[in-house]
Image 1 (cartoon, helix red, strand yellow):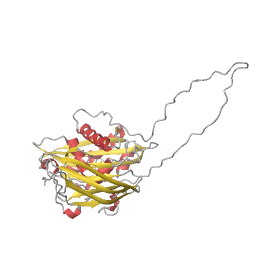
Image 2 (cartoon, helix red, strand yellow):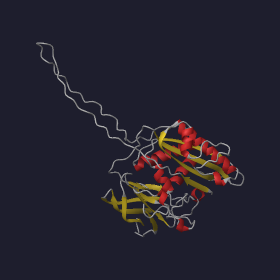
Image 3 (tube, one colour):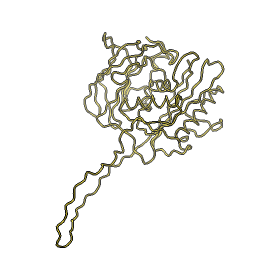
Image 4 (cartoon, one colour):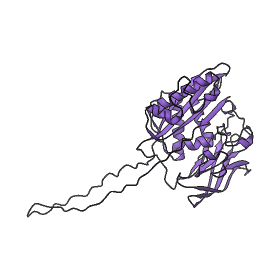
Length: 357
């Protein structure tokens, strides 16, 4: 299976202003010669928390559609991770649709230099050079925005749910994973699918555009939050890394790597790593991994100071329980976390391109 995954990094600044309400004093005045009638105190409704996490929500995508399966899979992952769900936005749907169709058209024409995040103004379907341009063109005024894109082939005769496959591919890449788990509130999704000669299946170009509108706060977890992926006790976890651009493990020389395991703190806190290991839970056999931190990541432009991740040099075993162990600090506070997950029992090479270990 041919799979292409690409990511755009958008440098964003979010300004949060803490506002306090002023207090005052007053005098209750009764009628002359009449006693003042005391009032019963009420419990006013507290103001809504602008940073409150959103629920998974409902969507207007057609039942059984790739778009619905993609946003459902992504929202379920975000809620499990603890960063809140995404709301469907029609303008982001338009932006995602425009670019997915552009990519699919370029793919069908064999113009592989133009199947990423940058559009060429001389090509049909152009709506903006960069994701931010295309999102603005669609009428969405964003304070922060980003785009995730994957193109893959649903092989004939292999049962799959393309939307869920797309999200699984994206979440297997650490750079995409952290982008999909950011503070966005709104999202738009589109699958431009087509059958091209010689590919042996349906070609899907799936775009997920995510953003926070101007004047709206991002949704952020509490300062005590620590995100681990896969989440503790997760099952049916992919055994391999589906690949991404830029490549977080070029030392593997293109060989299949295992599923990346990551830890993340609140975005305003730095994370330091003393040890980060992975082992088979039953036997205790250590897994040989590459550790990536803010200071060691092979792609510094995509490194984040609040995350660390390990990538096994080889795919993990099927139906096997693994335990991850992280020791370090987040925001200067000592952190010692252990969590476990179990890999899928199915060989998914025809979906994601790698055999199990």
